[in-house]
Each structure stands twice: as C-alpha cells, then as structure tokens.
Image (cartoon, rainbow, N blue to C red; front, side, top):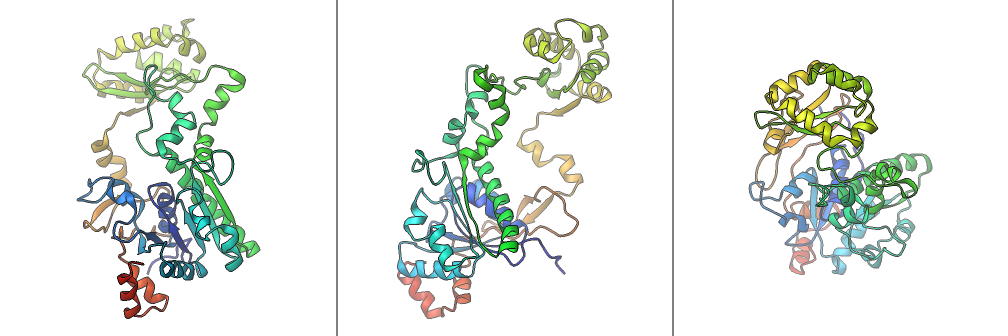
Length: 395
C-alpha cells in the first residue's frame, strides 16, 4: 500500500512551457499532486523539441515533466476554453508562464478566477513580474542571468560565462514551488486562495545577494575568477602531476595551518606574512598558486586527495557528466530509480531530501495529449463529443 504523500488530493492545472513552470509543477507532482499539463495540440510544449538526447526525447523535457497528465487544448478555441474553465472550477492551483499578459487576456487573471473559485491559488511566473517598466519584456534564462548581474561575476577576467544549466528558470521554479506550498498552508487557515507573482529576475536576484553586498555602496564587485572562489583562497581547482585536477576549499585559519603542515608539508608557510590571513592570500593568490602548483606537480591526483583528506581539508574531483551518472555516493544511497516515457523506461534521480514518511511519486513522462480523452471523460464528455473536439482541433 502506498504511503500518503503531502500533496495527495491536490489538483494542479498548468499552462506551462520551457523550464520554470514545468520544474515547479514537477516538484508538486513528486509530492503527490495531480498535475494536468495543458499543451498545444500536435506539438505540445516547445521544450519537447529542444533536442533528442534521451532515446529521441528532449533532455529538458524528461527532466521536468514526469508524473504529469498531458491534456491538449487550443486555447484560442471557445470549446477548449470551456474545458479549461471546467477544470479550473475544481482545481486547487493554476500555474502559468505564458507570454506577459496572455493569461489575463484569456480571462485567467487572479481576480477573474477568484470570483468563480475563491479557493483557487494562482501562480504567475514571468521574467520581470506583473508590473513595473519591464513587465512586457520577453525573458529567457540567459537574458535574466545577464540582467541579474550573474554574468558579470561568472567566467574568467576576459570572458563572462553563463551557468551551464538554466539557473534563472530553476530559481523561479523553486520559489514558485515553495510559494504554492505556503499558499496551501494559508488556505487551510483562511479558506481563501492566494495570488503568487514570481519573477525570474527577483528569484535570481535573491541568489545574487552575496555579490551585491560584497559590492555594497560602490565597492569593487567580485572579480570573475573562473572556477576559483572570488574572495576566499585557496578555493578552487589545482592541477596534480598526473594531469588530473583536484578541487579544494579552505574556510578558516585552522584549515590553512593544517593545509600547510600536512598537505604541502611546509609548516613555515602558514606564518608567511604574505599568506597569514585570508585577505592576504586572496590579494597574493598568484604567488600562492605558484607555490601550490609546484608542490602538487610532484604528486598524483590520488596522492593530493589523500593528503587533503588527512588534513581534513574539503576536496572533490572535477567530475564530468559520465562521472556524475556513475557517482558512487548516489549509487550507495540508492538515489536512482526508473520512470516511463514515450521513449521507454529511463533512469531518474529521486528528488533531494530522503523522507521516511512517504515515497516520492515517480510516474511516467507523458506523450503529447496522452491523457486528453481520460480527462474529458472525467468532465462528462462522451466519446462522440471527444471526437468532435478532435475534429474541430480544439484538442
């Protein structure tokens, strides 16, 4: 028997595409919510066509859309809008990340929906929020990384670099996820649904608070330092003599002394006036890097790691994707499972946060419109009516 999940019995309708909203609603589905994903007839969510890396399916799509039901609706068709309105009458949550203003123009603003279903929680996800001078600007992940200043502190001194995954989308999706859970808790107290307005800029802006404060009142912002930390040193990748790299990080003076004594086997270096405080090590990082590189050049990667472990200095290997797929810690903790998809069974990581009270929902990634007929039957449509909706291209 399946243990009860936190969001069992909660129905979420999502007008979603790309990453931010689908990532949010997948978290809700993981916790047991029923997520009905509304897609365009025929093509579906355009993220389905980003690539074909997972046995013909798109990598972004299979990541963010498991455990959902796919319902195709052409929302320009009145018959399709009637179906959507019926669904929303019995739903708990609406999530949407359509183009700016599109949902409101279709009569799906919070005010309009609240009048019909006061318990409905409406979460709008956009680039810049529902008001302000940037309200109507289109926003994609890279553009928000740029607007939020992320590119200014990421990369090398010569080349600003974007993050390797969609961090602005992920940030917005996670704040939407937590906001919806908060709204469900609030509704249990008040009986009223809430309006949630999540912007990608504000979400990534929250994650930029350390560099913002570092540059407080016009001070010099953190420099772009590649894979090294901008203000703590040594903290970053260092080459070993066999061509491998070791990532290490020091946090305090106790660790600095242990690093010198055990890892570098040079106790006198700990009190060198150029390096006897983090601010000095950071200011003189080129000289210190040369010293560390010289010592590590005589050691293999494994020997460097062994010395770091002996000194209790935090360290890691610089894994690639193959290394992460095969990571022994993920294997040992049983973090892998399998889910279905239109391309067959595929591996999937369990959600972070192992919980002994329940098992996460790990159902299949849906094909476009896979659940349309079943959902329409739930709403009382006959087979003949469903065929008529198909004929009119409403679904």
